[in-house]
Amino acid sequence: MDNENSLAVSLFGEILALDQLVRARLAKVLPKGMELSHFSVLNQLSHTKIERTPAQIAKSFRVTRGAITNTLSKLELSGYIHVRPDWDDARRKMVSISPAGIVARNNALAAVTPIINELISEMGEERLKAIVPILRDLRQKFE
Image (cartoon, rainbow, N blue to C red; front, side):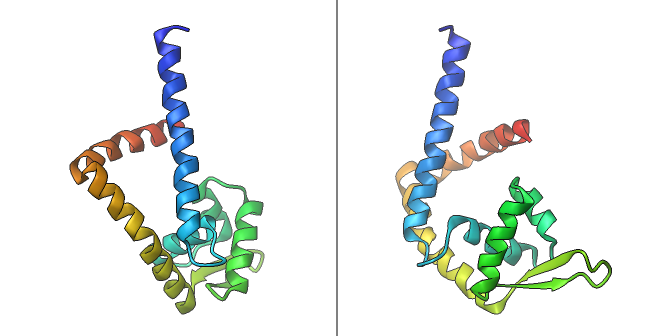
């Protein structure tokens, strides 16, 4: 195997392993019944503070509309989001975070914060800050 292929195999192996490890670690500490996809959607809705369509949410997470519909259904059943018809186009729905969703998101964030703080403590803030632009560039290359 030449050097270029070896680098690619090592790089993607590390990225995929890291993805699995991070997901597993976060899933263990999230509040009972909350999945990582639920936290991600609630986190996004709490940041944007605007209603979004399911299609917009699906696009931002690079998942199918079917996948996001499943997540939104579970969040709505939990009372974490409000789903209403779009007043301009009854075929579409609009999604917003509920007060209970904000509390759930904040509880989940409090649960994952120690993991992030531990990582910063062990690896160093400057070192982690240095890899963020590299990871962002990698992500953008695949978008």
